[in-house]
Image (tube, rainbow, N blue to C red; front, side):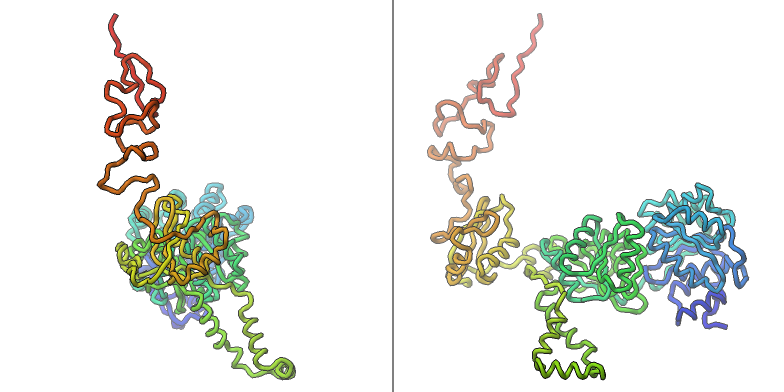
Length: 622
């Protein structure tokens, strides 16, 4: 008698051999004797032990009281998964679970040689695991015999529908015997899943485990607000700060995966990519590199990450915000498994704070809002890890004592320690200096609280004004002007006062004590970068003047001196310069009857403004 009551003895023995101490809630739920022959619809989150759960659930149906399977022939069970990785992971789990029963398990997944799979099916298999498209191909070609099927399992059913596999799933289930058991496992049960269950299950029992209601209790959620231009730098700092053994970075597109992979490789991170454009062989090698420690960071899309099994995954980073709460939970569920702690970090550009708030609220997650780790915090964290390194707890071994003595005599303790510090820091990517956001934790949607309050003029002190040759029309923004001024002009943010954006230029106030040093650092050419010039002004500039010289509100729009240079008012008159003598300022250019295009039957005069309608004479009879 084993300690796992209600389980087929052979599978209970496999659990004990594997080191299982107790079952998860979803595993307990599916082995209820009342469900032995019933169809079930189970909602359980990633990491809850679903693969072992449906392995235990279908065992009585497959073995029918026997301790071992007989000779393999037509498959008795079919397990369907959305991706290659997940299907192969399911196969590995079922192999050790069913090992004492002598079960033959075959796989049919996209990206593998169909001829090899066909030969395996011809030799016979008790359980077949595959992806919808490949399974349908084998059924269509007559290689997969469905006549003996007793149980069908749909793993990650919601994801398969999202990926467009509904037609394939319906084809496969229609090809299976009507008296089979159908077990559906899904993270959520939207209306599409409920409709599929109603069509292909018989009085299915709905199981919602307590693990679903208490999601990811071992995961620490952190939301980091960053400037939009600092998103990638913030991810670099997050990876450096946590220095996780395994980290998974999620992107929304393949292009983003390729871009971040190239960027992080250049920064010295050991990184692999995981996207749909990779071959099966490339994906397998990438996962193996993560498992054996040759790579520490995996950058993946949501679809490619389905089925990724990385034991001990410590960190999940959302480089792009998830599209919905279910995706957020599924991404984060890759960490914090099997009782281990994990961290899920959302990198939130300041412009998307409101979307992130709604996402977390709809997922019933409370995240800690904070700034990304700064360069100083990362260096401090590196030092703490170095001081806590277990290597210092070990006494010198006999074969090391002589060399240690020689090093201390030749170089001294201080130089030896300094060399050790330098060696520990070698190869680590330098942290990024991020733009500091003001009032980052203000409620989303209230711009006046998020933005920094303007500093009173008298608090800044004596200053000098400069003109920068880039304004609103050149998409100038303080978020990139300030770092440029500090970098080129060798000043700090505290030495920059007011910034006044104009259409064609920007006025910047710099502390008087730093003005001379600023000009000296910029150089005699007065060029900041990329043709952006800086000019010192005499006194305070007049704000609000238009690039067209338009006078302030309340004045007449144009005078005689500025008529030719001024922008025409929004009237019905032509915008091109008038031909001939300029009319007086108090007289309209043309009267209604004098407009050149108003002459009946004639062609418009030269200089007719673009867009004027061509005159068409009225038709007369006769």
